[in-house]
Image 1 (cartoon, rainbow, N blue to C red):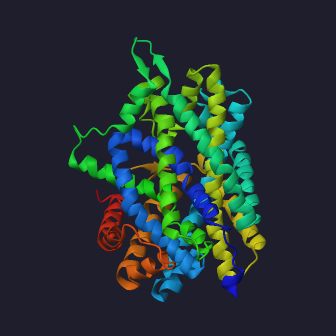
Image 2: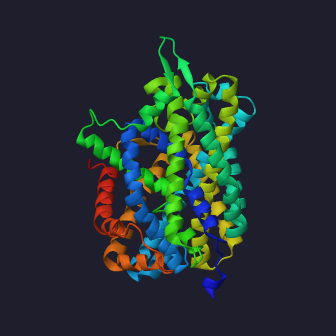
Image 3: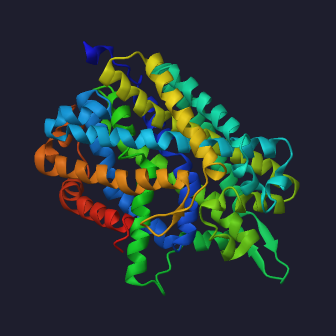
Amino acid sequence: MENKKRSSFTGSIGFVLAAAGSAVGLGNIWRFPYLAAKDNGGVFILCYIILALTFGFTLLTTEVAIGRKTKSSPLVAYGKIDKRFSFLGTLATLVPVIILPYYCTIGGWVMKYFFTFMSGGGNEAAADNYFTNFITSEISPIVWFVIFIVITFGVIICGVEKGIEKFSKVLMPILLMLVIGISIYSLTLTYTDASGVTRTGLDGLKIYLVPNFSDITFKEFLLIVMDAMGQLFFSISVAMGIMVTYGSYVEDKTNLMRSINQIEIFDTAVALLAGLMIVPSVFVFMGKDGMSAGPGLMFVSLPKVFDNMGTVGQIIGTLFFLMVIFAAVTSSVSVMEAIVSSIMDRFKFSRKKSAVITLVYAIIVGVVVCLGYNKFYFELPLPNGSTGQILDVLDYFSNSILMPLVAFITCIMVGYFVKPKTIVDEVTKNGEKFTRKVIYNSMIKVIAPFLLFVLLLQAVGVF
């Protein structure tokens, strides 16, 4: 009875757009461009695409298949696959529990910037201390965070078909059009600096896309590979229970292989376009130095770029942050849904009750995260060499430790206990062909566990 009552996407398009909406979030639009800029542009992209077609494909296929096979959220699904791995469901569910409050905090920052640009304050946002002054204030970040998470809650409360699917079908095409439009515009830019050097968007495109292996040591290349692999967790929403949850809403008649290929293509295209949108424009106005701005690229460097564009920059900036809001909300919806679905499955609560519990928890922790830049400010050295506040500590623990650990144990479970055939049989249950089967088997058993183990060693500061 439980399986019959479970909500489901109305078709493969709804599933693909919802899954792509989850994948296309701040990880793609915020994190991908600055990693590409930091890691020699084209070299990072080459590594990313190869890993997406092998490592990413393997994890995405595994999680979606586990979800559809068990018709359960992650908290319950892993135990149904193999009782010995019930604990993996708890670990996988812990990831979105940790991520949701701080992700929505950053979502609140994006909303603040959107309304600043929309009200004509783009030049204010370009001021040197604007971002720091905003996040260190005590009230404003909390207000924007609450607005953002309530919007997320509103989508979740409507359910799978009328909420997540309907929302994704409307927003994802708009988001894609905005990304393409701003990307094309960034390539037309030209700027001559004070020293008389002229830089164009096409120059920035060359730096972004063309791999340059000269002067890269083996250690540097390995770090680029690790960065690209770490980015894939964000880009395809694996190892955080989301794809297991969304997979559980997929009907048995859906061609999983085709849907997974479409998600891969959609996500990789948007990730590349996000970089195309940001990296050339930052290069034009700020040179290579501006491209090394790190995570501050979106909130510090880009407003300066929009300001340099003049009047049109106000419009482009408004459209850009609107697009980022769309991307952030589709992702926060998937993160919250993974938690809500787990509560519903485990405790048999209604969707409304589960969503309210999740909302109350997230607001309490989110307020603490917001206050981490003022009242609760501290600096904690992390094993990976960085120094963090509350948000950074939560980000480090969820993304650098838990996600690789969940992915590693999942590979061991499927590769050596339940066997890859379990996943292959689920994907091909309607007679579909399992493309990349050889790649899947070798990745799940040997290559992915090895890469994930190296990633974990890097996270804890071994190298």
